[in-house]
Length: 255
Image 1 (cartoon, one colour):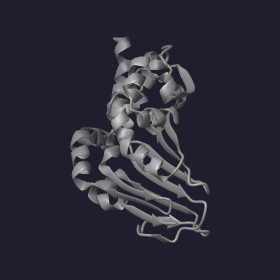
Image 2 (tube, rainbow, N blue to C red):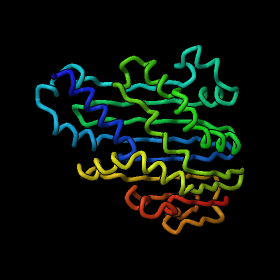
Image 3 (tube, helix red, strand yellow):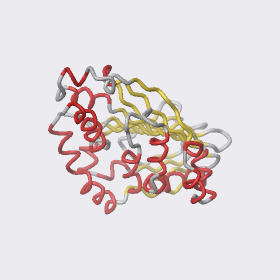
C-alpha cells in the first residue's frame, strides 16, 4: 500500500497542474529579441496534499527526493523524436529549457519553461506552437529523459491550455486575444481539476509581466498596471475571475 501514495500525489498534482501560481514573463530587448518564461509554482498545493498522507509515507526515500535541474529540450530528446521535427520546431526546442525544482519535505514544487526568441516573428511562432510541441509528447520526452530527476512530473500538462490564445506580434506591438470557444473547451477538460482545487482551498493566481526596452505608447487592458517609466506592464488576476470573464486576459500593447 505504501507504494501507492507517492504516485497518487503526483497524479493529483498533474490533475491540478492548471490550478497553481502561474507567472508569465516577457523581457523585450533593444535588438528586438525577447526572453519568455512560464513559471509554475505548485508549492502551496503540495502543502495541502501532504496533509492527506501518513507520516510513514512522508519518510520514504522517494518523498525525501530533492532535485534542482535544468534541461535543454532538444538535447534531451531521443534521436527518433529529433528526426521527426521540422527545422522550425527543432530550433524552438534548441532555444528552450525546462527547469524543475523539487523538495516535497519543504513544500517546494516548481517548474519553469524558458525560451529566447530572436525577433517578433520567432516569438509569435513559439507562442502559437508551444502547446503543439507539448502535445506531440516532446516535453514528456524531456521529463522522462531526465530519469527520475523531475519526480515523475509531466510538464506537458502545464502548457496544454496555451492554444486558446491568438497572437499578433510585430517589432512594435504585442497583441494577445483569448479565443472564448477554445477557452471553454479547455475549461470542460479541466473543470474537475478546478473543482478539486477549490474544494481544497487552493487558489489559482495568475501574473503576467511584460518588460520593454522603451516606454509603451498604448495599452488597452484597464486592469493592467503600467510602471512610472512606462517600460513595464503587470497584469494580476486569478482563474476564478478569468472563468467569469475571459476577456480579462486580452491585452494589446503598442510600443
